[in-house]
Image 1 (cartoon, each protein chain N blue to C red):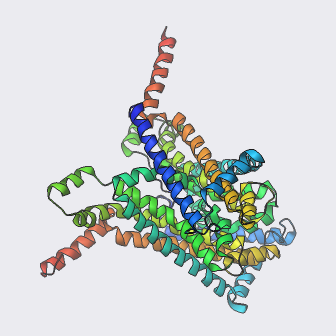
Image 2 (image 1 turned 180 degrees about the horizontal axis):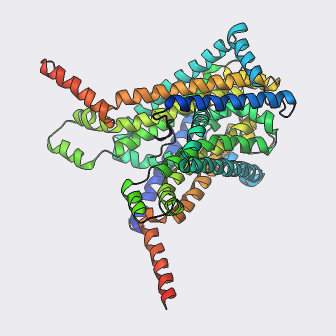
Image 3 (image 1 turned 45 degrees about the vertical axis):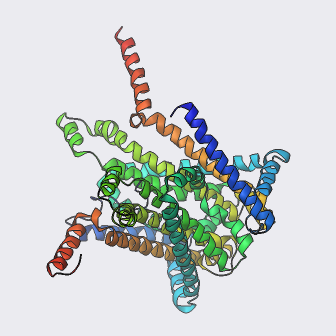
Length: 274
Length: 288
């Protein structure tokens, strides 16, 4: 797409957006929409200005929720990869982990919220733990499937060349599994955020979840929606971080990155030869 | 497409020739765990206040299900919320996706909003809905509805978008009407994707109802769990959680079963079975 066509497209999108907002605002002013239920756009805008600029209180809470979600994700995803790798490498290990993993999957992780809070206290620990619990399974199952679903021809080839178990893992299983693992990451990074926020709803003194609940119960709809939009922003940030890492590591799936990396490697190789 | 909503682990982990021995081993390990836990708890290594003893949990099952029998009411209420919200939300999602998805223009302008909504933690809207609809179970149904709306909506849209262009051209060149194109091409092509969306929605529906009950409610399993935990009656809280595990298991299995029944053409055995049945009916002279 040329840049001019892009701007035309963007303009159209913005026009539609503006029209929607105007329609919404008009309907609210005329009383077609209950403003307690769905605050009008100008109220939401006021909430955003207040939270981000006038009082600027959102940054602190934003940072805390980001920290909780990221830490929960790191722990949950780490455990998921560890157990899945163990299961993929050893059949016995897999056999005895599987039923418990399934049990954890069918239990709605969020149901554990009060129990986790009793275990880990009212501080950040419980939010991180709930995030870890909710994001464990997607990573676990995706890693496991990625590692066990080898291309039979390629693994035959590896065996024929006399590859060791370790070579098979590092050169075939892991690279083949990476796209799948990252797909799991993308799901679980949002669920970690959900875990952190839900724990904040239940008990907490700081974080966007706390902020939003407070505004909602004050019937300050504009500010509540502004916090909700901040959560979307947080979700997008986390998602894009994973996306960027995905792009860096699993470079062979996108043509542009593939060419760039292969050019680099070729240059390095040429330097080595001279 | 990811596999995160499936509960079956890859083949080779399930039983093989000596299934009975493996089952025995599993049971032995489970018994060992539970025994160690019980002993550790009695010896004072594990604090029974926070990590209830297995025997206490068993007693809790007896109490909640039989002596007091109070879990039935709460479970029924929560399940009613889940089912009502799921049906309303997914019907709305699929219906709306078909309405907007069949037009190219609308779809293009809708896309940015879908991206933003996908990144938003759906359950997060809970407090706002509760503030608007009150503490009763209307608000819970609305929350479950919202949680269940997006996955079927987005998947249905995707299913419609991913219909094969060549096949569409083919239908057009055969002068199929819009209704025919929809019924014979778009709907069947989109069904696997829609079912995947429904499975995701169903998986999150239970969580949505529970969270709504945690935030503010008088009844329901979520309320039961938070009350028991608040009283540090952990054994009963565990009973509730284990009950929910069982419910979750049956829900996922049920959805899988419906999926297999409805989307028969992705599974070879089922395709053959359905094909045989249809061939028989055709030979008898009935209509296809």
